[in-house]
Amino acid sequence: MSTIKEQIEAKLREARIARDERAKNVIGMLKSKVLVELKSGSGAVENDELWLATITSYAKQVRKAIPEYEKAGERGLEMIDEARFELGFCEQFLPRKLDAAATEAIVREIAAANAIKDPKMIGKLVGLVMKAHKDDIDGDTLRQVAQRVLAE
Image 1 (cartoon, rainbow, N blue to C red):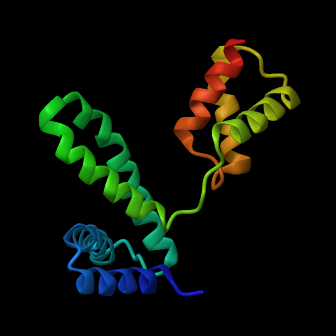
Image 2: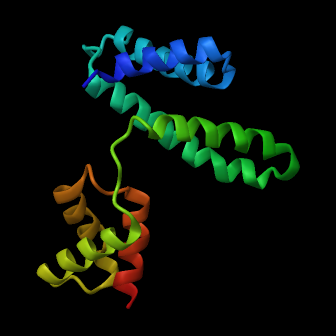
């Protein structure tokens, strides 16, 4: 299997041939963010972990921006479309997260195993779930599911 950088470079070649400006812009943004990190003096090395962290961070940033664009009404429509495109592009490189039903099953199991029933203990529950399933679970989905489970 090729590295994320190789996959990104292949996507860039495809975008150039297809004259896909949106894809070229997202790739340029991601490459720029990786380059900034490499030059930051943090000792970062260009590898799949750095690319994955960069893509994850950017996807999270875009995901948070979408509700803000929705509040802008008519003016935000074009920006919402662009943000959704960028998010979709980024998600093809990210590991798949569990859906709400699978997340709920894990939350219920860990809550029962640790006798967590009080809504005030949501932090402990979220911490335990993330400790065991950090790469599999979306943090926002986890928090929503945990709040619902503990409210029962």
